[in-house]
Image 1 (cartoon, rainbow, N blue to C red):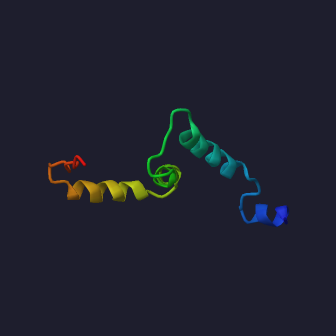
Image 2 (spheres, rainbow, N blue to C red):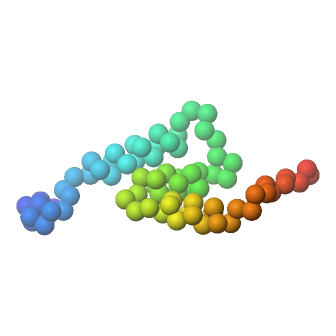
Image 3 (spheres, helix red, strand yellow):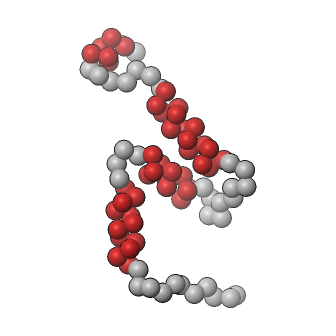
Length: 78
């Protein structure tokens, strides 16, 4: 790597930020008594969205609230 050039451009020259984010995700995903009925992909996406610099969850909750009609889906007993 050309560290001096990257520093002049203000680019990161360390992996610490990425490693820190992975530790946060691992704590949320791999803790004790955590079981994923549909696999960990949906939870992993939520963790990443939560840690993201963007705000994808805000748009999700706005859309979800707009679809609410006050009734819960009933579960079929089968």
